[in-house]
Image 1 (cartoon, rainbow, N blue to C red):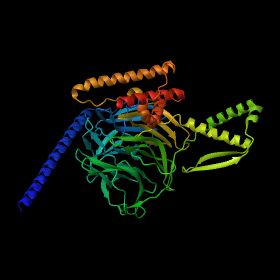
Image 2: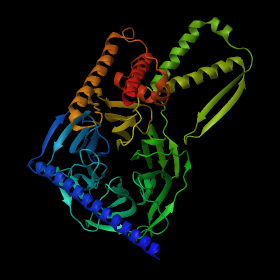
Image 3: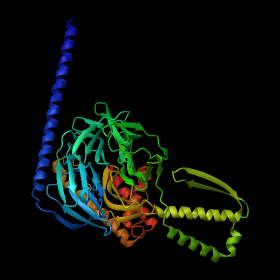
Image 4: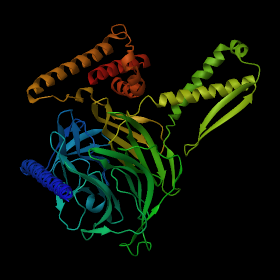
Length: 580
């Protein structure tokens, strides 16, 4: 009995200790939140000093990700708001407002009094009311060291005609969150999912809220049926009938202390108002099973609504967990979802028709000039030709033909032409990335910024690309990435070493940029080909395409392929050695 009593007493003591620790952590979390609120209030007091609207022409915005890019409903303009940037040591949050003029290919910065506080991972939706309105909900603010987070639950509207911000204070809305999704559907804003993270815990949501744009009131929806599991970063699109489509996303759950397991969702759901809109307060979830070629599993992809009743997603990353590290596979592909046909298919570049005709004429002239010698070299016996044909929905069909010599030569030349077209079509394209900002205007997709990782380094982008979704012929570079805007500072072990580390990093960056400049000026003779050493050959094989795309983006589409590869290898080697 004595031993049992001791065990019970010991157990109660452990419970008291755990409860005490829980209260201590809770107090610390509240204190950290209060600190962040004080910091946000300080920034807002600075913004409050602005008394008039100032619009000035400016260079392209600095590198960032997790902002919002929206198409103006009445003008040929794109509106960029918020976002974040991390340089290895410090996190920067923005509440700047930039406007991109599509026709002039120019940027302007618009300073408006009393804007929303700095944030990233928020959501923005545009409606055509009263000359255009940009609605912004939620998002997060992070401490400079990136270890503390404050999640917003505020709702703002930017009146585009008068250039004024207004905070809408209405009760009953969603809790503070980021990574959620929001779309304008009929005369409502529909919000789904997201997550909230503190120093001690996190939670993912699958709740649905609607904000009525006429009465300015919130309502929490209670759809029937089985809906999506809690998640953030999914694809959300509104249909012309007033329904909402959800695809994919990411969530994680705690398996045991300090061990989390992430999940990449690939399921798809339809949220539909029952009664054909007569009873708008009754909604129903149903699961979708689309046909076609679905996107590969990924997180951090960006989405937009395209023409022809299609939604699209771009880029993203698939993280592969190894023993003690996480390595990301980044994407720069496009997938379309045909809402009417309930079908996925990948976007395929077709290439410019005029370029194809020029290449055909060139090859025809060469063949005629060669004369009889070409005839003698043609195979006279039957030849097996293997061709792969990609259908509109992405299905790959392999066709084998056994045909005579002259016909085989014709087939072979056509096949080579297709390969050549494909190679040329890949010369200009956005490098693989996640968390980019997308907007569609007049059937043209615009992709701005985002990030990708190489080893322990994060590259935040500031480039702008466009592609006509009707033609799908080629990507256009509207704003090239500025290599000088890439800053990365290694984590210092102590504050005393901070200045020394920054100086060393700056020296390395200058040395690296000078090497690249000397290559560009002096050609291949001044910088011999960099053969990857054995210790980073595996790393290079996995990341070579990223570095080639990055080098080509910097050097331009006219750079010779050998020189591009050489610069890419040099960059890869430098960053690999720094990271190890």
